[in-house]
Length: 244
Image 1 (cartoon, helix red, strand yellow):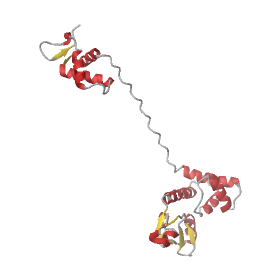
Image 2 (cartoon, rainbow, N blue to C red; image 1 turned 180 degrees about the vertical axis):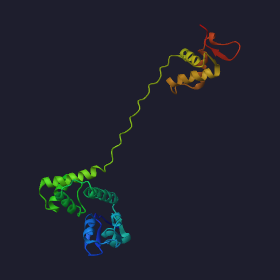
Image 3 (cartoon, rainbow, N blue to C red; image 1 turned 90 degrees about the vertical axis):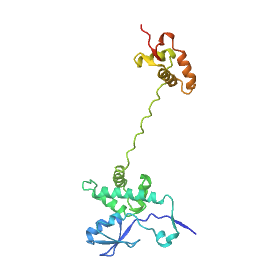
Image 4 (tube, rainbow, N blue to C red; image 1 turned 180 degrees about the horizontal axis):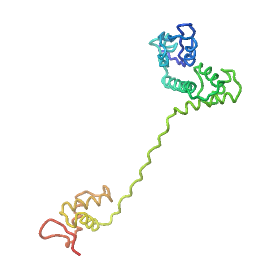
């Protein structure tokens, strides 16, 4: 039987100096106070030096730890967990930024709040969560906390890329008849053109206006039949624009 579990537990470390268990958001402050250089993840028992533990953003859950090969994560679990971790990481970076203007009171509330692993990312449920978890009922203070969180994560949101404009369909050229096609083709050829090449050019002009309406053989017959006698030469295979 395959068992399916979900877990949203935050990474928790044990300090090697004082043996206190500390959740990741509070670990940096603890190390500065305690002076320890090593911490151990309580889930995977891996020991990290200072500067290494920050990369340990996720770990095995209780289900993975005790179920082993029987553990199967839900399909969207990893995606949602990663999104939550990035959301919290953005808030931590905002708090720790050197140029931060967050009030000490708001920073203290945020630090305490980040010790929880299931913080809602929507404002209304977040407000209720803060009231119940921090026992904080001052709406202004709660709004100040939310403003910091919203600001931290708004900065990391990808800028939507505008869709490229749809090119306007070019209108088909209007067919003005074989005589116009003949004159235009000769004019572009310098007033003189070999008849086979002329026929090909006239067919191409027709097809630009009437795509797929007739075969090239039929069009070739129509093109040649439209050439007046005055355009033909008795000495060679060239068709020439008559002199004015």
